Structure formats: structure tokens, C-alpha cells
Amino acid sequence: MSIETDLAPHLAGTRGPAAATAARILAETARLLGTDRLVPVVSAHIDGCLFHGDAGVLFAETLVAGGGQVAIPTTLNVGALDLIHAGRVRFAPHQQRMAERMVAAYEALGCRPTWTCAPYQAGHRPGLGDHVAWGESNAVAFANSVLGARTNRLGDFLDICCALTGFAPETGLHLDRNRIGRVVFDVSGLSERLKAEEAFYPVLGSLVGSLCGEAVPVVAGLPPGVDEDRLKAFGAAAASSGAVALFHIVGSTPEAPSLAAALGGLEPAETIVVTPALVREARDRLTTADRAAEPDAIAIGSPHLSFEELAALERGLAGRRARLPIYACTSRFVWQVLQEEGRAATLEAAGVVPIVDTCVVVAPILPEATFDRPKVLMTNSGKFAHYAPGNTGWATLYGSLADCVETAVAGRLRRDEGAWA
Image 1 (tube, rainbow, N blue to C red):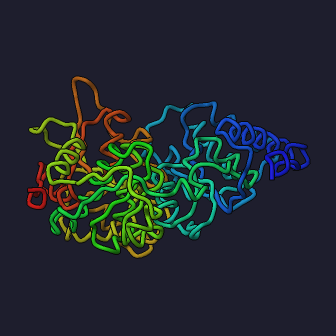
Image 2: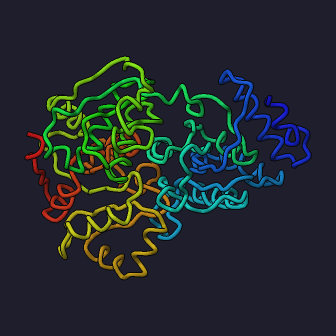
Image 3: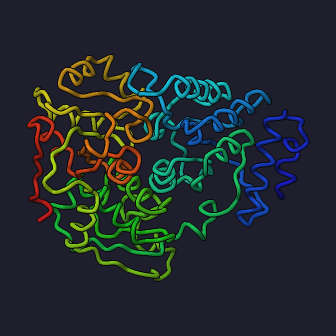
């Protein structure tokens, strides 16, 4: 059916002013994207709820004033506030008030207050083939690639328009032909030791994102059954270093049971043989600090830490106390369980600073870095490594979770180079 047919009740105003506004924005966006068709979507994840300025708040409040209510299950990405730990975010009074108003507006629209960039860890897991309307680059990559749902990388405010109407433009990754892999990354020549390292996956994602352009990448040569946290880290790095919204890992993601299936039976447009030298170069690009620099803090959890990743942090600390602060970004759902189990207090006593509902690269949480007082952040996140210098002014050091823990405990840089040799 046509856009006008699908959106007729909305455009006519019978569902209220907010739905009419959302429908007009959606219709015009679909035409700009070159389609006259929409696809019904079963869920949404909203990235436009992060406070960047007053205009975004006023837009959301206009939708509320117009009687807006989401038409499908809808979760919220990270906001600009840690709603559990007061004072974590250093906002001026006006910014604080506006960020609070944005929280209230999106909740009033009927969105589920998840406030996480990993909604798939909070029960929002669409099924294989489901059409959805998701924002936030890592969440989009995970939904498309790991869950096998179908969404484009929606921009801020278009996401809530899709949620209010229950439709998205039928283009891009909603269509079978655009989900076929085109560029193969062959990692079969890399050592099994390296492929077993958790720190390898953000590096590989960063490399793939930087080289594949707009094509859908396929990774061949990894052991089958790569776990979700590693796929999450890969996708987040690929989406931040490039424009990856869908990837196929042969033997691990649902649309890639084989290389031939991932390629749709076609020959690849290009095959890139990933060598140890390429991997080391990609890893080194995630470090922007001087090689002799020592870190001032550790940050992990972009995307938000899962139960398993926090358990790994606990095992790494092994009862020791960190000399450097470890900013651990996670969802309220994960942190609440740790609180109930008494594990949260133990982590905090060990020097872990929990950040919930937001993260250190989108909100002013880290101590301010200045030209005459530069700061260095160590991280195991490819996404943090990519965004931290521009968003926070802190230079980065990349290492594994074990490297980060040992560095935090020692108070100076500790990094195991063995697997990268």
C-alpha cells in the first residue's frame, strides 16, 4: 500500500495532533529516502531521548502536548542523567532541568524507561525477520545481525515518529536484497589464541567498519558460536568506526549458517585477508595517548555491561582494591540485580564507580580535561576508544578487560602483549 493509505488516520488527525505530526515527518522522510512504501514495525528503540539541547526537549514535549502515545512496545536508549546515582553528571542548573524534562516527556509518551544502549539485555529482543524501528548504532547492529530482526539506522526524532505511528520507511535493510553480504573478511590465518581473546573482537570490528564502506561485511574463519558479548563488542566498534548496521559472522549469526548463505549465493565484491599486521595496526589506532602516558581512570561498558561482563570484572579484581577509578557503565536492570545480591556494594568498595542510565562519553561525568591538564582513559571498548577523545577531551589507551583491571589495581599501565605478538 502507499504512504497515504498506511498513514491515512494519522494524517487526517483522527489520532491526535502528535500522531499527525509524526506521520507527516515519516511520510516526507520516506520520500526523501526514495520510497513510496512503509512497513509495519513491531517495536522501537529511541535514540533521540539523549539531551543535546533545548530543541530536542521541546520537540518531545510538543508530542506529549498533542496527545502522543507510542503505538508499539518502545524502549529508551541512554539519557544524559544517571537517575539512580544523583550528582554523577555535572550539569549546570538549566541543563539539569531540561534533561529531567526530556526524561519526563519520553516516559509520558509511553516509552519503557530502560535508559540503556543494550535493550536486548533488558528483555527487548525482536525475533528473526521482525521489522522494527531502532535507533543507536550498536543496538541497530545487534538487532539486525545477532537477532536477525530488520531495521535501518534511524536518526534522532524519526525513531519516535515510527514509534507513534507503528510504521517505518520500507527501504534499506528491511529489504532482502540489501541484507546480502558483499565484502568478506577472512580471519582464518590468525592464531587461535588471538581469536580466543575478548579484546580481539572490538579491534576486528573497528577494522571491518573502517574498510567495508557501505557494504554489508561477512567475517569468515572465526570459531562457530561466538558469544553475544563478543558479537556486541564487534558490532559496536564496527558501527562507530564505519557505518555498519548489519554484519554476518559465519557460523554465529542467524543469516550466516555458511559463507554461501551470507553472500546470498553470489561471489563477494571483495575479499580482504586479515593479517596479524592489520590487526595490530587496528588495535594501535584505538590508542590516541602518547605511548609513555599513564592512565588517570578506566572506563568500561560501551555498550552497557552485561551480567557476564560484570562477573568477569569481579573475578579480575579478586578481592583487590583499585587505585584508579573504574567507571563501569551498565543498565539499571543489571545493576539492580547486583544490588539485591550484595555484589554492587562489594564492587564499589573495590573502587568501581557505577554509571547507570547513561555513560561517560555522552554526559559530563569524567573530570574535565584541559589543554594544560590532559587526561588519559584506558578502556576495553572500541566504541569508547573511538568517541572519548572528541566527546570528553581525554586521550585513550586500549587494552583487554584484564589489562584494565590490572592497570587499575597497580595504579599504572599494565598490558599483556602475548596474544598480539
